[in-house]
Length: 572
Image (cartoon, rainbow, N blue to C red; front, top):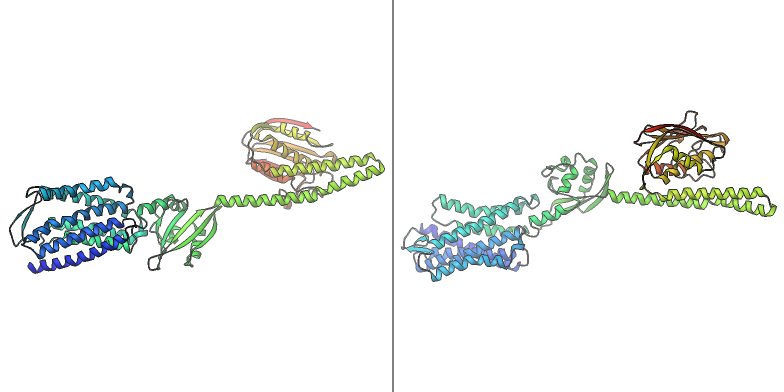
């Protein structure tokens, strides 16, 4: 028994020295989160172990009794330090204020007041000497001792609950540190259970709590436990709009935020291999494999099902610069890409408008200038008529370019009658001897100005280009009118059609007729049917070029919801 106690005492002395050294080092790191609390905890444990060791080595003497009381100088700051450390670890440092420290000081003040001023028996009732106790005295706890014991266990229980809860919720990113914290908390409880249910000749609590201090020191100094606490880490990662995956060196996902789980549509991706988790996203998996070949930070953009993602892979290193995993960051940039495409389209439009202004407008302007000079020279009225025609053509070109340049979405939607729209547009166009026939009527919900532009463009194309060629080209004419061109507007169950009796559009050219700048006419801008398509699409409808019954061109506009009404009318 005596030999065992001596060995036990020397072990405690060694542990006390180690803990004291760690406490000094922790104090030097007190500017780090939790550094001061850990230093106080280690210092208290060191004093505790030192007092028990000296009490054992001097057992049976008054010195042993002195250190039996003196160990509380270490016990109380150790227990309080553990509680403060738990608050710091679980990101509750906001509770560490003067009121918290004042409350923690109440129990030590009460205890030592009872020790120095109270009667014997409040803390211990001592008898002996005896050979059975580790201090050589029979020591029985009094009411203050039991009150202190209950208070200490409550504080340790609260600290344990806080740490265990947040350690288990911190994920695998800090796996080693989490396991260390859990082990550190389990040790004192294990010692308590052994003390209650088993008979031991030595006190295990000082040794096991010393183990707690050493493990927390390792987690703090080596694992950088409190550099990013679990709560702070989770709050930062979960607040990101980007998908975040942490992958270990075995290509297993060990952490993912909510955005990442939603992106892959799987709430259980943590623990899966990258191949399994990204099985439904082959483009993403292929990019990951390509990026994975390089240990340095890499970045790429991928397209997946009409969505664009910026993918970034960053390596994770430990304190020894060893690769321990990678952070896989995915940010959706679909809106940005759409803006880039819209800007590119706008730039293309500017190029087209510049071409029209520099080339197409120059032709009628040159004609007007030439005819005006002849008119002045010959005083011929017919030349003035030709000048007027050239000016009208320039006006038409300008209207088309400006209409397409607006590129506006419909905002003023009203109910309109198909027949009324067609007749109004017919009155805005120089139709000559052409004929308009309206068969059926229906309600159209849309922007009146844009729909008038649609009908005007189609009517003008049919009338103006009707006599220029024996067949329709691939843009600015829906058909060939000439003096006898007939244009039909028909209501359909889901829209309407505009057709003529010209030669029509060859099937191989029908897909190109809505393309900007495509025209078969020397005087065309290539914008007529492009404007038509723009108006149709801005309303959410569909447009298609087919063949009319007489063999001419037929525009089919569909996608409307209301039902047609009966009407048949012919206008010349």
